[in-house]
Amino acid sequence: MISVSFVALIAGMLFTVKERKNNQTIKAVLVFIALTALGMSDNIKHLDLIGFAHFLIAVTITFFATKYFRTRVAYLFWVPCLLIIVVVIFNLFHIGIGLELLGRWK
Image (cartoon, rainbow, N blue to C red):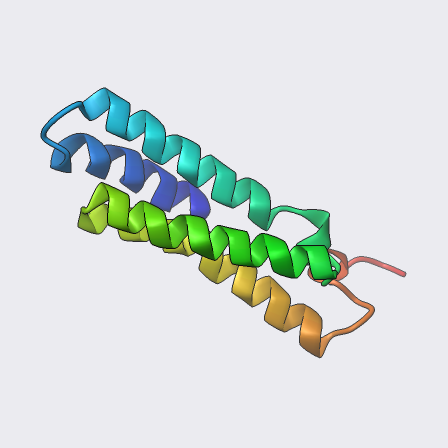
């Protein structure tokens, strides 16, 4: 889901932003990479307090980025945030397993 939204984000930014296409697209790619890196943090996977702070940072970045880019395509920044929410909710209901350990032999 992240890879499909990433390609759609790049293509959409190129087509919808009329001025400084390359500059806006590079900024959008960097924001998306930052959000994905925050979502892949081990602290989020293991439900630490720092992981919750990473989630808040990701939501804040997404909120301001969607206001900055002012295109509908920028709403694809919410995809990594939604996946972070899925991981956090899974970890709340399955304490001690972790999403990355599900399906592995103990």
